[in-house]
Length: 216
Image (cartoon, rainbow, N blue to C red):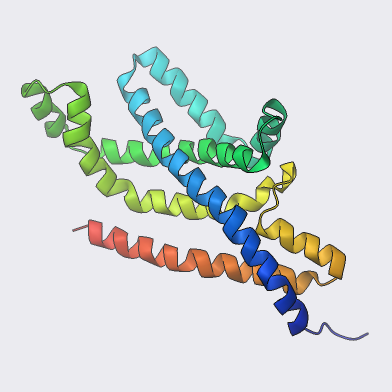
């Protein structure tokens, strides 16, 4: 029985296909999904705090349900509800909504870290609610939560292969399909993993440095 032999020709053959899938699908899903998640997460955190308690509690429960159910299951249901949409759009919606619930928790932690005196000072100055959030609360909360939001974006990037359940042809799916046709799974999957590493590791280092910088 002979051992596995790495094929450089297969690796060179599959690399352009994976890079194309990375740029056209995986990267698009991550960037668009991160923007939606960051905006929606802030909306959830704001509404949960500002709405009347019964409504805020219900919204908090609803956000928790989304956060605690599996991403592939959510993708499956969204796909069958919005079957008329293209797969990339469905993937962006699923990733954005799912990760908005995690980012909402990061925002909540950042908001709660602000000392009560800040809120009291805004009330004493009779600042409107919107201005209080825009000029006093959000600048401080975002400073505390930005590194955490970056980490969630990296996690989203690594979770894009879960969208295979609805047939989204992202990078890992492209690697699997190439391997099935050429019978060279190891080269295709290894290069896909290296592309993930090359894209996420520098971002993780940058987030770490940013976190340390914002501590001061």
